[in-house]
Length: 235
Image 1 (cartoon, one colour):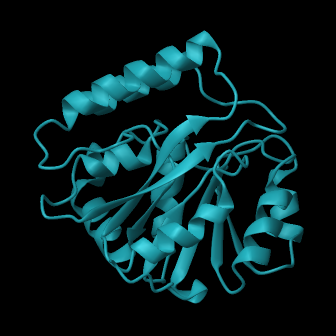
Image 2: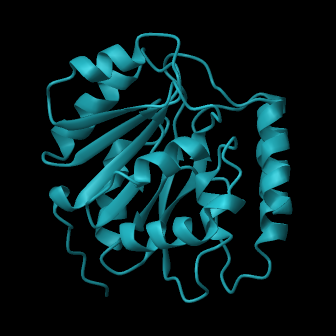
Image 3: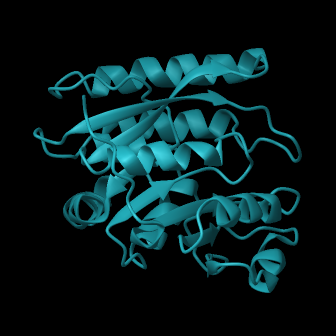
């Protein structure tokens, strides 16, 4: 049986990409800091029109950094995460949405497995509430295209559309340095983008979780994101 040794919180940077999450961001920060004291958090904001940035700047509980991307011409979740990675100095990175659909309680399991794997992917074993038809189509279609793109890889990803994952910082930075120009920065699937270019010998682990329902605010996923995903698959 694999021995689970928890990585110290100070060795982890949690990256939270945001866009108009004023109704959720404080709750996320409170939960994460209460569960994982000493963890570093980077909120990388893609020019929110609400008070997201103000809330983060005023936040005083824990090591929280705001990366303001308002002046960036090329907006997008993928670009937001890439910019945040450049600021990371810890050994490990975990990416999580800031809308509480990804359970912060699972950060611990991802961190434990990063002792033994280079990358740990959160796998949605269940969606808490039924998605509307257009969201199902985007998810199913996106997954099918992603699997076609990754067919040449020596691994099978159990959830190609996941946005919840952990990775060794050195690996992430190396992949970005070599392949950043190929990333579809306007897209929203930074994990899939990275899976396209990771070395064949990358060790991948998995953590199951329930994809929660959005408590407040609105989903940012729309038809244009499928276009960006198709562009990414073609690269």
